[in-house]
Length: 253
Image (cartoon, rainbow, N blue to C red; front, side, top):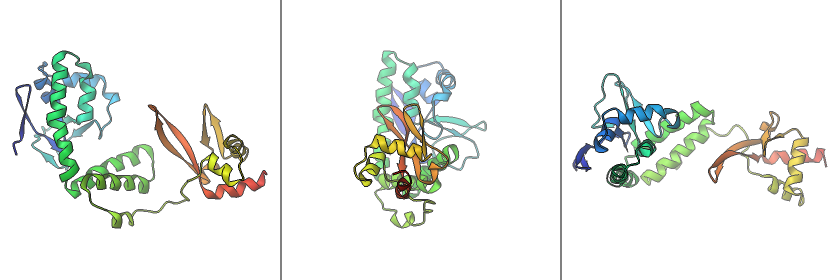
């Protein structure tokens, strides 16, 4: 298989890091026929909108990632993933930019997506998703068992292999897994409406109203957990309550 792909009559050398295709700023400037330095400038001006490890990678000379056909200068190099590239070219909206964008997505990134789905090596998939999980753990404080379980699940999707035996090695949760929302709690209590349940939980000092949403108090963290969710482009948290919270309602009924 050739390591070159022709985009806008320019030979683009295939570059991969941990099994994921990437492009350099120079690649973008070349295929979009821009002055060298244009892509890097646009990236730096909007750097806060890009997520490291998702939209781009900062590769140092000493980085021990699996890299294919990518020469790394002593100062290091920044490479963009498909999502990072698409974000960057938002600032290039002439007719040529749209044409090149379609070519790159269809002939460069999309080909790799198919390859990863059916032929990605097991060890490479595990490394990539565990790296992402570790970043999430460090940045957000999410429990390692949960993050690694998601990482293994994503690796299973990409390789088609089952990692059930490895899942057994993951650390168990230190508390009951939250599984009840206010509506379900109301049903357990004999048909109480969710609105009334929320008021009762507030009275028990387990949650407090913040804006339009309920958030756990310190005491409430023993009986429930906040889980992030996204709906219609809006991200927030919802509370899932542990079964043992039901025991507390007898105190106020």
